Image 1 (cartoon, rainbow, N blue to C red):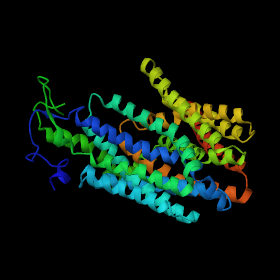
Image 2: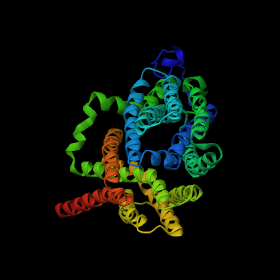
Image 3: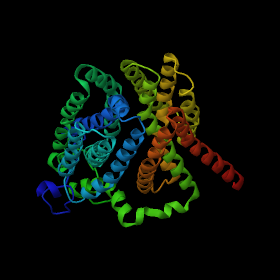
Image 4: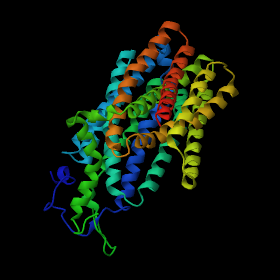
Length: 444
């Protein structure tokens, strides 16, 4: 029980020692590896979903079920993310994380034997999505507890690892499919995902690895008395979780929805996310319908991932020297995405598709990287609550919108209208924010 409550004990507990601080390294580097593994394996195989299950959906008479699976996956991820945050108030990182890893791997095992789309919705969408949703708060909270000064650097390294997985997994899946076939490829991916057990096992309570503070006169908390390390680590640990608990017990801080500008931001980001997530899943299916080979599709996906990684690096470099308006940059990227989704279905030329995918990868960075900054601008003093509302709204929206896109495909038998639907999602954000701009400009 010491481990379970190590990170929530108050003063007088087992680790109540003055002058002790998180390592900002040491075992924290091991935690960094665990977090990197979690996001590499969680996002990597999901990024290759369209390549992996293309033939499976063709056997089911079309790809209409793909948006449904993706929608359920993201919905389950959002819901269990909140439940995981609540569980971390009572249980340790490892206890909660191992439950998530167990669910994720169970989803992998059951997916090996699926024969129908509805089975894939349950095994991959519900179980696997729930497992990843549980592990995300564990990873972020543990990481936040172990690092202070080096937090930005280490998080950048983890983002790079995640991006590298997005680059390599499509090629890996293509190779495995050609060498071992569909079922054995699923089995090998399951074997790779077993590393998540290791990633969660190393999530030790930070109190096990505290070090003595050597900085003279260092104070813990903008107070006069030096509190115990337990108080510092407890506060840091709970700072992330308080937003999640508040979401449940304070009705998700719905008073934020009284601000029309915040509502506009929430809806705009949500619809942009629907377009982005669905695009990543359905682009490979579109390319297969064009007659592209598996290697061509995998290469195209890899090009998009490399462009995304390059854009993240350039954005980080640019913002280091210059201040940018995150909302305007997000808006610009969404405007461009409106046309990119339509352009992708206007020609099946290989080089044309490669170029558009590369541009889409560059633009995607503005959505994935900048949305927290856009939320901060919309609710500067209440970011945790704003983020909670975003996760809930986006998860529910994807859960509702993706099946509709699947119905569109079933009704038309064409991917053209599906991508027009994704373009429309981006257009919702553009129209809403443009309208807001003119209304508030008049008011001013």
